[in-house]
Image 1 (cartoon, rainbow over the protein chains, first blue to last red):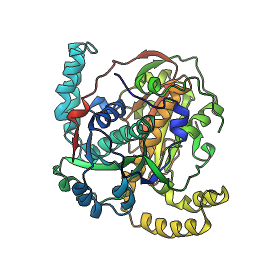
Image 2 (cartoon, rainbow over the protein chains, first blue to last red):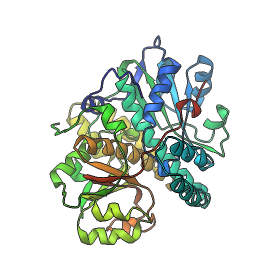
Image 3 (cartoon, helix red, strand yellow):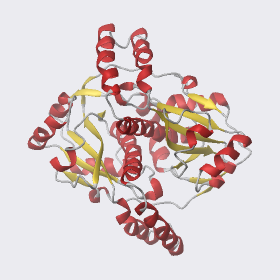
Image 4 (tube, chains in turn red, cyan):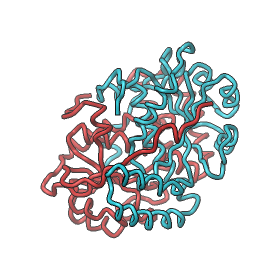
Amino acid sequence: MTTSFKNNEFHDLMFGRKSVRVYDEKVKISHEEMLEMIQEATSAPSSVNLQPWRFVVIESEAEKAKLKPLIRFNTRQNETSSAMILIFGDLRCHDLAEQIYDEAVEAGKMPKEVRDQQIEAIVPYYESFSKQKMSDVVKIDASLAAMQLMLVARAHGYETNPIGGFEEELLAEAFGLDKERYVPVMIVSIGKEVEAGFPSTRMKAEEITSFK
Amino acid sequence: MTTSFKNNEFHDLMFGRKSVRVYDEKVKISHEEMLEMIQEATSAPSSVNLQPWRFVVIESEAEKAKLKPLIRFNTRQNETSSAMILIFGDLRCHDLAEQIYDEAVEAGKMPKEVRDQQIEAIVPYYESFSKQKMSDVVKIDASLAAMQLMLVARAHGYETNPIGGFEEELLAEAFGLDKERYVPVMIVSIGKEVEAGFPSTRMKAEEITSFK
């Protein structure tokens, strides 16, 4: 994979990340670069590699106007960001299991027998999950990709803000997705920083960790 | 923050990550280094900075034996890893809101008035969440830290494997946590690689992204 990282220093990418409130409205991100960032972010792991993350990139004024009443706070991010990236989890991700595992076989990364065993085990296992359990799985997996997306954005010279407050019941349908299949996980605003939020502290690791 | 990164190349840390099945049983990780990795990983963002992630680091033979019947697959990781890091979400994380925001004020990162407004808004808002909504919030937040933990582990020279298949109803109590308060999110095995799983492919970004 070719990449165009402007910054490849992990320490700086991780500790320099901050939640940006106001972006430079003049900055647009090309679809090519946006797809490159999503491709990089989705190197994240997922349960049995089913990759349930789905992305809707809101960049036009008309669609941002549709999004506005659906987010409770963070309206400045919606107004000024290059894009609002809606991240959904696909509750029917196992419908793509054969496609995903076939690609691994074709790429010479997995023997055909392993593919067959996996498909035979995974699909009925996923079918047995309750809707709540599936929702948990896809939200956790999609969050892993979301974290990498925030780091990847910085590697490309952008800043982000993860947004959790939105109308969960309305988000999918507002953008043409089947709400029974796609559950919203997070919105990530992205663009060039003009104004960051307050810097934040963290609890000490000793306070939140026990050893057994 | 001082760190001891052996590898600081983000590109390599992200794309070189793989799920390791068998670790070098002789390798132990000091508590000091484990806490350092958890401190680094928890630079991840969380909803209104409530940091609901909690870590239980299982390293003794006796505790690994307790964990064994609670994980469905991944028994080799349990046997050979330096540690199995259980990541929980704290459904009462907002009980720590004052402590967290007081620290930000003391560190000079937030004005006292903003702290007061935030506390007044956040605590009742979180109290109004259903248990299911709280569970979603803490699982998403804890997953962001989990992703950073997997990258941080590589920066320290270790490999990991995220594990989602375990007895969710039993995990907290087995290790002395109140199951009504702490919901299990993920287990991350960590250690020095002996044997990795199959390499995996990813769907193309174009297949999982739409622009609006």
